Image (cartoon, rainbow, N blue to C red; front, side):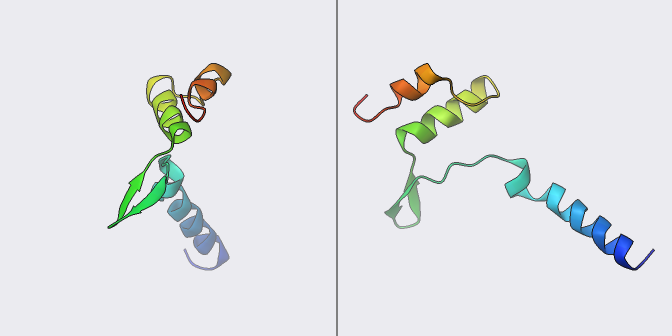
Length: 68
């Protein structure tokens, strides 16, 4: 198999196997020396996806607001 069909199949397979497609990651703020610190909203998002498999609800986002 060669030609455009093979190229398209290889492209789709590569995209579907990419870690950036398969896993959610939060970036955070760079604190130096290659380290990143997550914001309160990013921590809330990570917890929500870990515990419930969905995005945070309004109440969890409210708890992650600055100063809480």
